[in-house]
Image 1 (cartoon, rainbow, N blue to C red):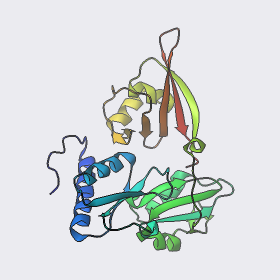
Image 2 (cartoon, rainbow, N blue to C red):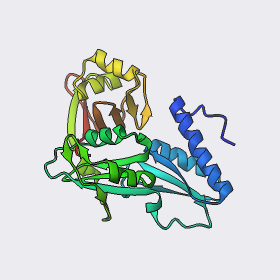
Image 3 (cartoon, one colour):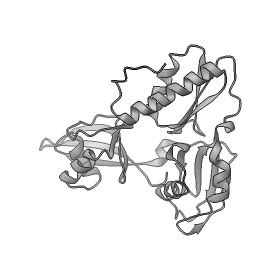
Image 4 (cartoon, rainbow, N blue to C red):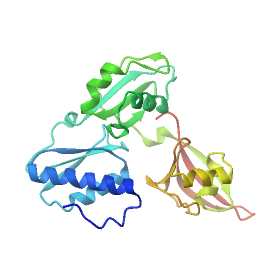
Length: 260
């Protein structure tokens, strides 16, 4: 039975995700077979790991197409089985992007317009080749239906080479000077918003800190925090580099490039 006390979870979305993960683990435990979740962000992966601790006879593997993947599927299975082929659960697809004319939002928007749920889509990597990691169950559909993006004809195919992606290749450095460490002040600086606009998008639920929704405008930023503002981008605070002579804070961020 699913744990009833879910007070450690902030939102209804998190509680629904937790219950779904628990049910997957429970099914694997009672049917003695492999059961996979949808793609999970790192916070939900941590929840899946905590769920597995309640099932001593289960193993848990995370599959995202490459070791450094952010979004991964959790696969629960009994400890007497071996997970030998991750292609039963995920597919890695690709197409050429030699002119760098297609970005992350273009790919995601097009796949969602085909009727797919975001949960069946993992990482999307953008370079001279676009890499799209998806649930194996939708692979054939995409190979058949995903033919153009932004009026560019594409030829989608299964990518069989090993993926080795360095996070440093996906981020560029940026620093800001801010009078406070409040999140509304920080994102106003980072994304060129007015303070009132920053507060509005936070209250609308568009902000996540470390993959968790944050609606408090006075929440503070710490080193290592990953900030995601829907429609604007993502940044990671890598250092609080002291104060200026006027007492303002100098923060150094890594800002995620569109090449993802």
